[in-house]
Amino acid sequence: MLELPMALRLFNTLSSQIEEFHPLRDREVRMYACGPTVYDYGHIGNFRTFVAVDLLRRFFRQSGYTVRHVMNITDVDDKIIRNAAREGVSVQQYTAKYERAFLEDAALIGIEEPTLVRATEHIPEMADFVAKLVERDIAYRTDDGSYYFRIAKFPQYGKLSKRDFSGMMDGARVDVDEYDKDSARDFALWKAPKPGEASWDTAIGPGRPGWHLECSVMSMSELGETFDLHAGGEDLVFPHHENEIAQSESFTGKPFVHFWFHARFLLVEGEKMAKSLGNFFTLRDLVLKGHKPSSIRYLLASVPYRHQLNFTFDGLKQAAVSVERLRNFKLRLTTGNFEAGSNPEIQSLAADTVKRMTAAFDDDLNTAQAQAAIFEMVRQANAAFDTGGIKQDDVPPLCAVLDKFDEIFAVLNDDDGPKMKRVLEWAAAEGREAEITDRAREAVQSGQLSDARIEQKIDAIKNARKARDFKTSDTLRAELAIAGVLVEITKDGIRWRRK
Ligand code: AMP
Ligand code: ZN
Image (tube, rainbow, N blue to C red):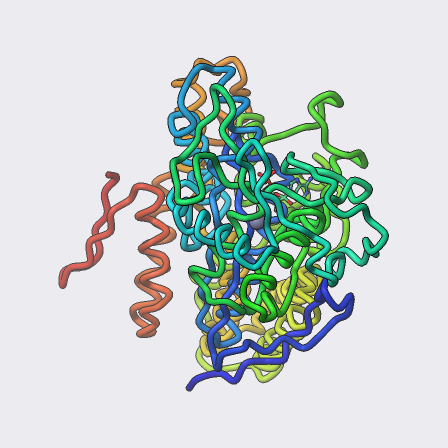
């Protein structure tokens, strides 16, 4: 039976209020997230935001919606052009490496891949967009062949960042992609070529798009002129998203986006992350230190997206313990021997936990509450285990709660070992072996499933099949496959071998 969507209540930066979320089209959510600028490896701050968006997308789906989730890869901007020129390579050569790294990192940390769009593949559309704004006198060309957005033509400018720009000097300009509120001026839509910079020949002349234009054009081309939700980190509210609204709404005369979703910046050990402070970490840095991708994801997901997450190494250890506890509980459930029958208390514990989790997510994605609910269930169920209080028919509902939790958090599958192995291989290939800690090597070793652990999982598959619970059996089989173990089910029994 199709579940009716629950009423998700979400904070909307545009209205500064918590609002009930309803998609504009019946059961389909159209969302756009500003993706990475691929000029370096992604840091944990970037992934704080990307994980928050991933949790949101997964919860939409769990609530019964289909989701069209588009993310851009910014593969041309000021920083990229500067770095590519410094290394003496083309923009494309430069960004290809970091785009691949981003996709690998996103998979490492359990982010489901959105539909990806690349700025450099939409250049003619962007030029046409500028041309239309020029026709309406909303954009103008300067002598060097650049184009600017005339913000005096958009009286609502400032409605997202809640600033009144009405007293601003008409015609003053800014041509860098990022700037602060006090220097809000007519901003560059299109930048004329500069010596040594990548540029494209288009209907409005040679040049390249400004960063803000990229997102307006690509989001509307994929999702329509008005869509449900646009996401990013809080730093994007101004100028990036403010400018996207100005361009898009001037172009279409329609509201651009219904909900604006912004994740708060994370701190590391109580401070703003900065290379100069030595507290700047990419995802790969943490893996090379021996931390599991599942612990990192769990920690990034544990603080609701509008609260400041203080990333600490103690917190990371704690997250590892939490994930291990959940995995052990699942193993206990799937490998245990239980008496026939059911215990009404456990049945209602499972049902209540599902309700509590859903209510937590509905409450502006309160991930902390959802985690608290599952741990309360694990605590009570573990106590019941010890006194024989869990019966055969209690196992499927408890497993179903774990599955539901994991549809969002995605940490139960024990695939850290093979994932970490790939990061270590990358470090070796990049000549960064010195950064691989003993802890990381040990984690990879212990991440290789032992024969005993594999036999345990095979027993769990047998039990599940006996109970005709093919979903659990398939999940376990898939987990083993990811860990490099092939399982063959024949009429004579179950065999396994390492790949
Ligand atoms: P960038 O690659 O710099 O364009 O950033 C990609 C995404 O990461 C954007 O949504 C940023 O807002 C977000 N972001 C950057 N730094 C942080 C941080 N310290 N905490 C949370 N999100 C961040
Ligand atoms: Zn964007």
